[in-house]
Length: 221
Image 1 (cartoon, rainbow, N blue to C red):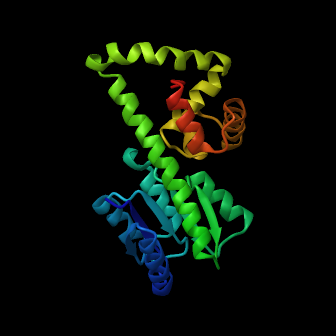
Image 2: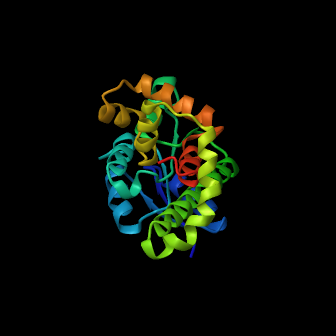
Image 3: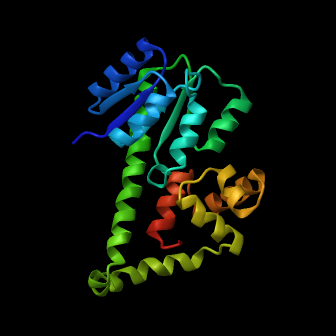
């Protein structure tokens, strides 16, 4: 079954061009003309990725992502902001809300397709690892999986995390943004950014998606 992508943009031409291209790439595409409709479609279609504009009627892209991230089932849902609002402050706000990639308009469909493919591949790997971990916690399977898990767990001994880094990592795996993590741990977003950067360096990962996968694979959480 093809993966589902939700495209939210108030411009019909943009929705059609993105939708046609992604469908040619083998995805199933649903679209919405505003953030409010998109939020309803998230519940209805359970998309695997969202591509959204920021400036939309009824509900803008920022609020859409904020509402989506409040739902535990969608905290790791990949989100791409596709917008003409590209100044530094706007990008920072988007990343703090939890977007994965910020692409400026005008854009190339081929680049969007490459970003979509990359994010979906990583999110599917993370989901697969998470399901495997849940299955491994089954008492009936634990006896058979435990001998194989020992070599993996020894890898974690080479990574020394501070108590605060461990605390931040647990919340990162939940899919919260830096701002949300800061609210929960009573730290500033800048402090959270420093801890996340340190985690990326120690685990030799390039982004939060890879960090989450690494943490699950090596039983760091």
